[in-house]
Structures are given as C-alpha cells and as structure tokens.
Image (cartoon, rainbow, N blue to C red; front, side):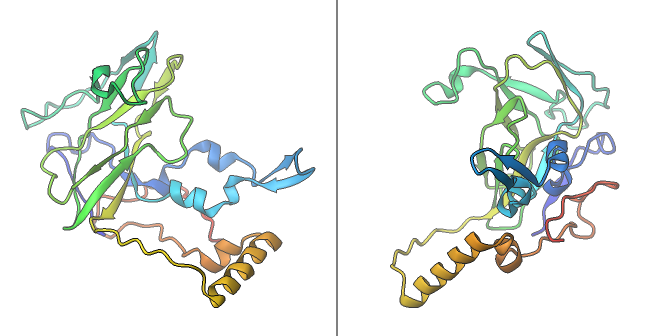
Length: 255
C-alpha cells in the first residue's frame, strides 16, 4: 500500500511527519510488566503486553501527530508556533480550532461542559484507488485528555486538502502540555468493497479444530503468536514519507 503525504512547500522542514504507529507507542506500554499478580487467581497472570491483538492494534497503520506543543492551563488552550506563512492562502495557520457543541447534539458525544476541538492537518493524504482512510482515536490510548471522533474518508478521491480530525475534550481537569509529535489520530487504509456475510454451522472437521485450538489456548501460552499471527514488517517503503523516526525502538512481539 503506497500512501503519499504532501505539505505546503513553505512549511516543509517545519512539520513533524506522519509516522508508523509502531514508532509512536506510549511510554507506559514500554515500561509495564509482562506479568502481574492477580488476587482473583492467586498467582501471576500475563498482562496485555503479552497480548498480540492488543499490541498489533496499537501498532497498525500510521499516526498523525501534533505539529507543535499545545498547552492547557486554566481551561484555555494555547501554543507558540513560529512557522513561515503558508504559500496557499486558504491553508490553516493554527494547529487547533474548534467545533460548536451543537454539531453533535443528540449524540452521546454531546456534553454541555465539554469542548469540541479540531486538530488541523498540515498534510494531505493520497491513497491508492479503491481505498479509504479510517481515522480514529489512537488505539488503547485512554491516557489522552481527548477522544477523537472516528471518521472514514475516501482519500483516493479527497486529497487536495488536509483531513481535519475533530475530538471531544474529555478531561476538563487536565493541565499541562501535549508535546509536538504526540499522536492525534491513528489511521488505517481500508479497501472500499461490499461485504458478503455468510452464515453456516461447524462441520465435523471444523468442530474438531475448534476443540483442539481451544484446548491449546487453555493449556499453554503464546499459541496465537506462534501458530496464527503473521510477523509484522517494521519499515515503510523506500522513498515514502511514512517511516520510523531515527532512534525509535518499536515494540517487537515476534522475538
């Protein structure tokens, strides 16, 4: 899958690039233990750090990042970002803007005491024909003080301007700085195809395989990782803007 990112020429060299999601994992995941004591079980159990589906979801696709430091203090967002004036007049200048809450009234996203922010994108995204861009909150990142609103964009057709990423600010008590390069949105390229849903019952062989696999999962650790999980590739294509930054240490479950 080839993904092309473009930016205003005046801003080239001033913007953090989108990166592979596996290069933007949070510190808490890297530092957490692989096992923890469970009072319920009376023994140590494996943590989600040893759960390939949990990790693979967090490392899948790419992330759009914060272009500069954003500070929340006293309920107000602020930033200092000295960059050249974009060469395109209609191009956004601020890293963040806002939606009015009435735009989500009637949905569970609406709260009178919550602000709807909009993370402006300074990169356009072009996908191959027949593919759409699924943009969602960075996976399993409940530590972030906002919750991105999920969207699906036909980025093989809509790629002349940047895709904006709206979010609900969920932590009114947050005070601090969201750093430049912090994940804002996690994106996946998905094929635009119709689904065919087929329903059936187990055959005798399928029932046997079910029983054998279920017993193996209960009997030993790492069955899914060793027998079913496909090893992930850690690098983007040569010549692509999508890459792992120098010095980044992706979490590797394949070892």
